[in-house]
Image (cartoon, rainbow, N blue to C red; front, side, top):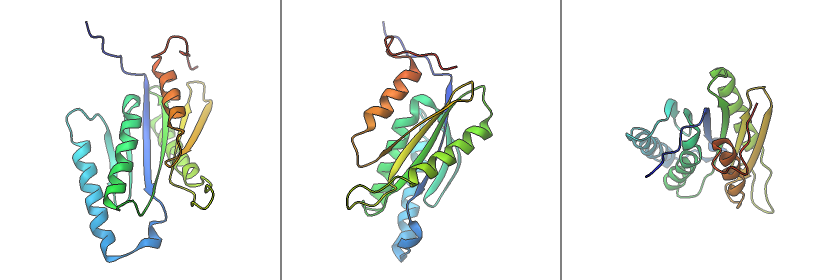
Length: 178
């Protein structure tokens, strides 16, 4: 018997933006942005994709999606961006995880705040900053928990651990956010 995991009671507002795009204006940029947007539109039109696209335009977008699709969606957006820009430019992502009972506007605002925090990621050695993702969790009581990682780091286990707690997939680590 296969048991399907129940969907979480949490939603995600996710926003993304290319880093320092104004510094890279070239005739090729318009074609690359178009290719990036076309790839995302195809991805979000798939039957099994439950994301609600509020807007996609140029190098930025805003989505609402189930918690279970957060990391796969974020990774796909980054992959599509890297393919369109041949790994020459970077992208930052901000995500807000919030209970379905919380106001959507507050979740969207927190996603934008998370994006700004991701874009403030400091450089590492001779590598420039930005190029990061921030996830903020808003509990039902209004507490905020935030974590951020560079796309270049191996800190993705931290994100997956955080999401595992919210999914209650590990009984030893399960917590009830209140």
